Length: 338
Image (cartoon, rainbow, N blue to C red; front, side, top):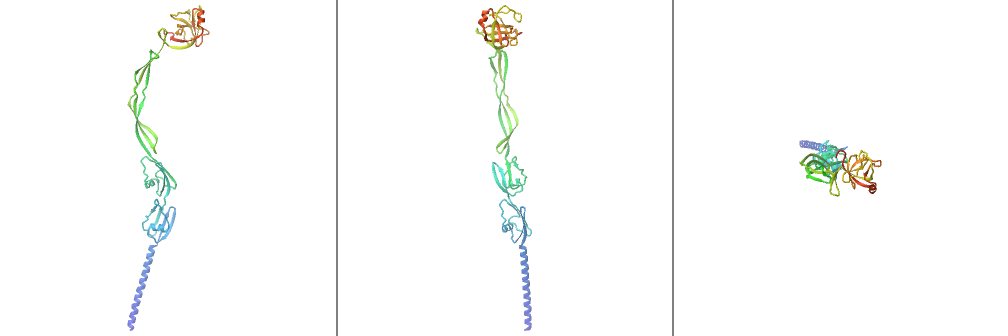
């Protein structure tokens, strides 16, 4: 009996020892599990650094636990679904407000990209080769940044332009001044102009000619114009003259000698004598005086100055009859020309 009791006590002690060992094992395993489940991590949000202790498994769970909200444009590393470990560092870059002016619109954009170029790519804003971005595409983003995109393109255009013809007038001293004849009709030419045109946001800002060539040469218009002045007398006779003057006229008579040493004469069918101011009509000039006839400037007089002539008549009564009147004086030839 005593031996059975000893055996029972020995068996009981052995079972109790096993139970204690098992409980200690469970406690150790549980402690290790809890230790492994608890993690200390760091969250960097901009310039703010947060040290957090958590039992959560994923990045998203940690953010929810700490009421950290994200918008679609925010950037986070690691990804929301990633498992966190001890000493995991979560980097969050919050999107900032950017204004982009493009295609006539103002876009209010939130972006967490590093620079303007990456922001435009993320927002599906496509740049053409010549488009201009201000500030430069490599510029870093900052809150409230104003980005302007100017759409730029170059067009090569070809235009036709009329070339006006020249009119060449050739003078002909054998023709009356009233005569003008076209000997060759003019014809406009044509040239082709190739230009490079710069367009910014739909508006032309620059135009430069890169090539210009004559397609058709213009043809000159040729005109012959008479330079001879002619006087048609009442009897139908036409006489050419050099110059026409509208002058005041008086008359004189008597036996005298002219300033050129000749005897003054009145010859209605030939050449009579008149007195002139040599500064106006040179002595020796052949003239035709309206209402008087052909004459030669042979004489001068103290009262004959500037725009006055004095015609010679055969009597004082004829002089009184002539009086003082305005007449046209035609210079037919200058001294040495007749």
